[in-house]
Image (tube, rainbow, N blue to C red; front, side, top):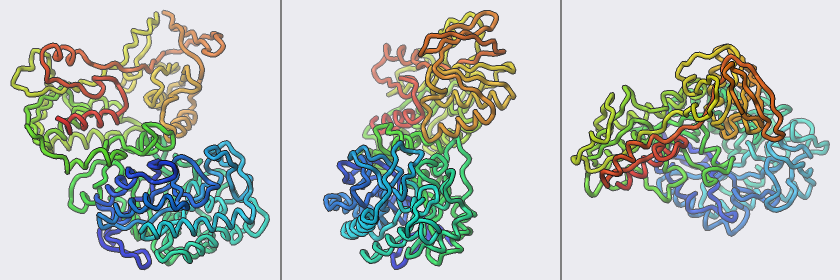
Length: 637
């Protein structure tokens, strides 16, 4: 079986076996899909996905609601849905719309109503006790699925997929964790499957296209069904034209989309088990799917391979792979694809750290479609970190003559320091950025520091990408010795008993804590927030906390370090009560904040007009801003 050969879902022919899985995007306005959603999905179709599933978050009944959901049951949604379908069809791909009702896995505060669920069994991901569904509620939601499916067919969607995955009342009815009913819809497996089967039958009667079932093969939360239950579930659930395999619930979504802090669940075995139980096409995925995983998924019985984050990182992954080209790889950071949606950060919609165009498809054209520079220039880039590399590659591709000078003997900047332990996947970013500048023909010069007097008038433009300096521990005015957390990552020695003071509030604190524990130190992590690393992305935070506490780290929240005495005594102050306490660790490690390395820019700015600074040289921020700042300047120069 080959990823790029045609296939079919029932009577629906599909150009290839690569699918873009339904993704939560929040490209919704007043319950209707936006033009940004159409552009976002169309970009994946243009990039080679034969099947686009989505959008996600399409609701079937007003008893589930929220600002990020498409009200697919409303006629008002038809124009937007039609725009989405037509945009995907414009690239000879097929689109199947995914429908859901969130049940107990979302809040009802948007419409000030109770949430409906099989039983009064609340999700750990929400704070509401749901209302147990009555017979009329069940009938109304089944009718809602059918009505929404008719709307999708009217909007020219090729088929419909019913979600029994995360955020799904269908899965909740199957679940012993969520369904404790004693009527005909609860109890044994056939009874718990009744609602799912009645819904599948109603939708199949309502439309002509294929009807798929998107099923979590295990809930991954206490009391839920497990992988071993897959045969029993598929023995009693019937009436679907294909099976799409996923895993988890809203509560366990950090495992569903395993990032840098969580070991991903093993799905090949469960997919193989599921495929053996059904006689319809199977859509398979891993928590993080790459093109190289296709053969293993096919061997496990999948007929289609479903991608998510990799097609956010590089929407042309499939077309590039078909042509033997290098792809930009997902780094599994979950900073924007998940945090932007679940955490309502970054504008509240899906984006990607390593692909500035993701989530901005209406604003930024594909890089291969960007016009060549009207006036090619001779450009000097100072700094070989992420922002300098991204700028240099894109600018050179546009026709500029680019030279990049890096003071050290390697490229990647602080990525080399960051890509350790759980954050090792960040090394892909450095490797891909370096590969891009080499492919673009950038003149890369290592061990080449630049002073202002070295920059002569032969350069048409100078881009300062000098990044940020490590935090200066001298600014704390402690009398005793402290060690910089960045130096710990670089190998600095510490004692056996370490107090780690978190002033960074982000993932470096977690990374340093794990490094110290790996060396065998006992670690107390002190933070003025409720817990250390407070600003770490929510999809990653549980995994880091679990790893730290599992290795014995202790957390002291709502405290700051007032003093470190010459003899090493540390005075802690409770930021809420003002009470103080002392510690006498072997070593105090401080995770502080970086400062912009702006001296070269400021000096050059006094001498010439054609100088720019980008990335951390402006203000130290996360990696996504390096990619964005570098690419945006290169697109405009």
